[in-house]
Amino acid sequence: MGARNREPLGCSQGVVLKMGVGLVAAVVEPLQLPCLQLRKLNSANVKIFSFSDLRIATRNFRPDSVLGEGGFGSVYKGWIDENTLSACKPGTGIAVAVKRLNQESLQGHREWLAEVNYLGQFCHPNLVKLFGYCLEDEHRLLVYEFMPRGSLENHLFRRGSHFQPLSWNLRMKVALGAAKGLAYLHSSEAKVIYRDFKTSNILLDTDYSAKLSDFGLAKDGPVGEKSHVSTRVMGTYGYAAPEYLSTGHLTAKSDVYSFGVVLLEMMSGRRAIDKNRPQGEHNLVEWARPYLTHKRKIFRVLDTRLEGQYSHVGAQTVATLALECLSYEAKMRPSMEAVVTILEELQESSHVDRKPAAERRQESTTGTGKKAPTANASKNSGKPRRKSLGETREKIGPNPTALVRSH
Ligand SMILES: Nc1ncnc2c1ncn2[C@@H]1O[C@H](COP(=O)(O)OP(=O)(O)OP(=O)(O)O)[C@@H](O)[C@H]1O
Ligand SMILES: [Mg+2]
Image (cartoon, rainbow, N blue to C red; front, side, top):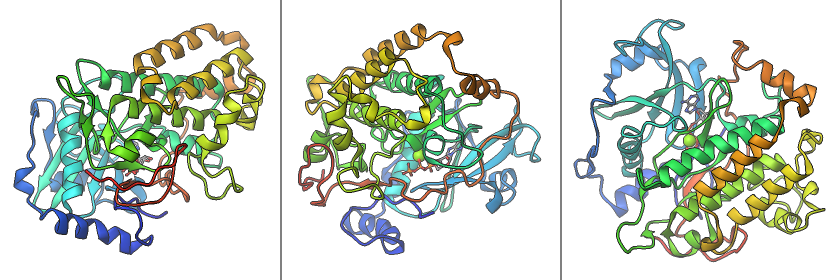
């Protein structure tokens, strides 16, 4: 699997790009780490781990304990004592996921800091819990609750015996959980824009409860009279809202657009961007939009592996919701609170006795200790990568615009 990167587009792919992060950060903004500080942090909520503690917890970051890899670095499975939170023997205490930053760059430090500052203060059933962090010499690590079923990305797009296609009802359950996480972030209590909503950042618990992880790109929402926050365009191609790409103006409605993309990925089993598809089908939103507007055509978009598990009304409701979230005009998109209401109503209207046998079997494995898809689970080719989306003229999205702004 290629490592993720967060560099401006327009460079060649691969290792050169990876090194580019440090270079860009160093040139544009010399590395001045002290100016970026741990703020807002309620230290009672998070533990400060020593590097040696985390080395023990992960058995010296053994390759076979790797859960996945992202632009930030590798994520390892580890074990800590439930009460003292100190490292303990594998299989004892509680499992944790340890994310280790693998590049010394201002951007990497920024994202590590944002993660600690945001996730360290939130406590919500649909946000992954941050147990603590390590900041020692050049080491930057994060310790999260372990999510036994890994990411939604793996369940939707990985093939293999571990990854049976998710049933329609489970997809809707995951969509609802993730929507609740976003709705909480947008609420007056949190007032945060997540900015990196995508399938790899939606993690699943044993019972398929969804939790959002990865707050490296999160931003405080606009305050007072302001309608948006101005930012450097960062995110992942295929998920970012068109107006954000063209102006750098970020609002909660940018997250709603990304939610629409993920909903479409869940309905179709297709990736937001897939260059392996035939011409005209590379961009999921562009390809699916005309079908979503016709009641009788939406079934062309639905994942054939679902084998008709959905009711017609249910499928139409979700297609309409996705289309609304993907409105070109941000104002026309619903709030995440409204999305939650629609998905809740949909869940209430689906009856257990209508579920097909295959789905009941899948759900009955929930919590039975069946081996969860974990190690190397995200070794995926064609995976979307988080990047700085500015400073490029590449045209993407349903309303392609030259990407020239960078804030
Ligand atoms: N708390 C966790 N529990 C279980 N697995 C996890 C956990 N956190 C991350 N992972 C796994 O590690 C993978 C890498 O996560 P990470 O957030 O670093 O990158 P990403 O989301 O895949 O990519 P990007 O860096 O572009 O956001 C995830 O896709 C997931 O499979
Ligand atoms: Mg992630």
